Length: 433
Image 1 (cartoon, helix red, strand yellow):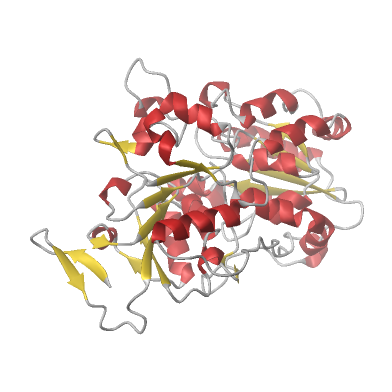
Image 2 (image 1 turned 180 degrees about the vertical axis):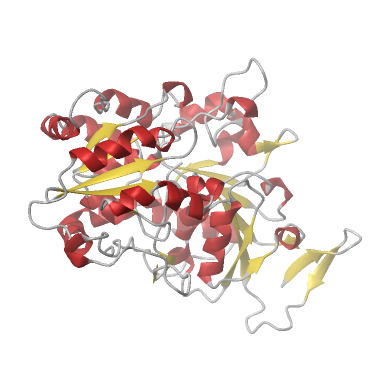
């Protein structure tokens, strides 16, 4: 039975008279953006088959709501308007962002929405003269009116505790190192690389170049006009297949029509623009090269066999203590003056395997244990015992063919607007910061 706050501000009981299972523990998933929502989707399998628990969702205020709104419509789940969600009492809330969470009537678990806490906050978000905080770990993300908002703060790596101690020491008592769900899904699926390559339609000997971009003025998308002509003119299609992955915040900020219009010429020349509905992780595992920036996808690429080239890396926007900053020293930078094929060959020949392995280890200090750690935390805060089985980390499903590969049809939105679903609901997660 939930409680709601009535018009006078008093807490009222909602009898749930229309529910068949009215006595469930109620969990609120707070979704700000598509990226945050996809990260939370990794938690859904942990709550499956438990008739004691009911999950509802809400769309929290954020500048990039549009992708999150589409995601929530695709889930087939109960979605409460934000105004109703903040007037309702829940047994637990989960979020990968901070905006508005101080209004929620529930113990809150805050999770990161990307890999490695790479980015620094925008200058405009900080007081003049103060150092820029690390995104997600500063006081402005974790406190309200001088008090820590979350009941628990999930971290991926124990090194992040030192950063938290510098930026918001009052949050240290609530921090728990859980690991990284996306890291675990990729790691569990690495052995399926050839299966993914076959599913994408790559022919024997054909190479896949994955171009990935985060959002903002420091992203590779911001300079894509310099890179796109080279991808078209310098990479022979019989040898190279090229796919472009654009951060959901770019789609949300500019609109789907505009992004597709900007990239229309790429499609005409056989470059695949991966739609928002497609899981980026199988193509990442299948890639021979990743041309990226300081976003999380580039960092996750250190787990794979892909050689990395950095098209953009805005040093002033990057946490200098992050694995992303270390990657900038290990990965070669894309040169505007040398043939692209020669640079791809160089990146492959000079592949720093030990460096990338060390950087990848900095993404998670609990490899393969996120589900176990996260479920234990969730049920502890719910005040009930965990289900009597070990939560599994599932491999990623095969992707659809790239546009034009072996005559494959274009990757496009399904007519019903729904996403590919597995045991836990959403199977795609764009985890870029």
